[in-house]
Length: 606
Figure 1: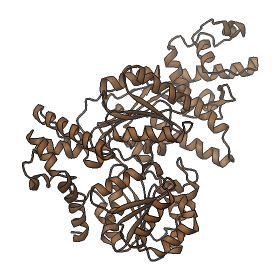
Figure 2 (figure 1 turned 60 degrees about the vertical axis):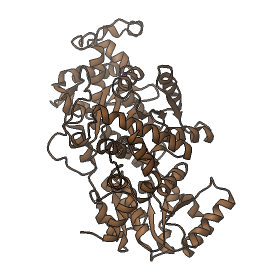
Figure 3 (figure 1 turned 120 degrees about the horizontal axis):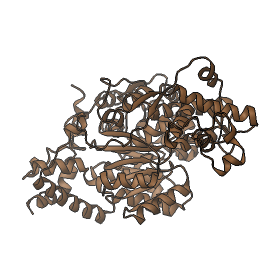
Figure 4 (figure 1 turned 90 degrees about the horizontal axis):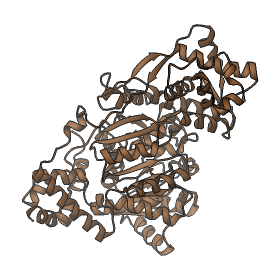
């Protein structure tokens, strides 16, 4: 049944009539004073797992969050729901900080957000020791992992919270943790006695798609125009230059896009992030410096124009789509150059051999996800130690348009033989382009200059096109049957190559589909549960969105702080005529009903 106090807060403050998944079990455990490590996917409601205990227990919930740029929006969202929230970070002047500190010490706050670096200050630690703390929440706990994609050195100091205040329960939360990362979080935060809650990592509303990279910016433009016109989304690129050029390309082609990367000045980054959060339908093109903690619920797509370095990073970044549970897309363009670039980055990375092996294992798992012929969602979940219900999800590209496999053993032997002969007979190493030209019998100036047309392997690969051969190279690299060497991405054989050339190892390969899947499936539960609005309800929904945009602009807060799209869709469908009826809608708590109820009802009758 659960704690009646927590259910009351859930309904009265946040406007929901029931918990989801493990939420209630986590909340009740922390309310009772227990420590917890919570692994829960983005959009599954992690925040409620510490916000409700902070409201039920005596004192102030102290939240450690690495997201200074987003604290204001987080606090605004809580205040809109009637929660007394504040924050302390470097953006405030001394008077503001003193006022918040006084409110904290007097117990006039429900939640206080702190940046982790502030806890390096002895003054802040003394403040925490003196104040009435109800719970410590450590958000984005994977930042403690030293080899993770979002490592923050300040997180290593957070174990001192327990030493200073052993009487206060702690809850650490993350959306991204393999079993190894989970162990590292537990050890570094000294949560050895904490109860571990592992929710499903599945996000059934997200359609995962990985397409062969041909002309990636044009492919992206076509994807946005045909499937996500007018939608908010994030496009990730590996370099700052690519970010700038892609944002300019999209803007030139009628899609409003803003760049975001660490090379921009802080003011520009803050403006672009604020616009993305507050305006509808904007696209941000960014490096991975952008996105952690982005709470915008209506991000309809996340696109990658470059290969992520790890499955953890990919999962974290794609998880920023569809936090509201509505259908969304994770789209990745992937090609041979990505594999070469990532292998080269690993070879030249700082750190010892063990570090490079770790990076290689992360990349190998990412490549396996890209090259799989099985359900992508099943492979993604398996990486986090979870099984999919059933063999296929019905909502990823390999389910919607199953790829063909073919016996690529002979093709692999031809390609590997070419690499071997260049080295053995000419003492030379070349990149993929030259190897493919030799196989296809193309007498280019470079081929004739080096007399490669006299090699016995010249022209033995005319049965495959250039794109098909590049796919063979890419997959041999992914399987460890080829390697990349040096600054120019030359190809060399590996120990495993001999197994193909001399010991009968077969090489199954994936044939890239001629065209990619489109968003036509409605087989997943998330899609089935999405309310399809009729024409009249759609018109009401748009009127509600227009009202919300105007009200949010007037208050200087993101639109979702007032109500999520999912709440507006439910209002448009039910069309309540009284405040009591409006109060039954998910996401309409007491404070929001009091503050906005009459205006919403006015929109419905207009």
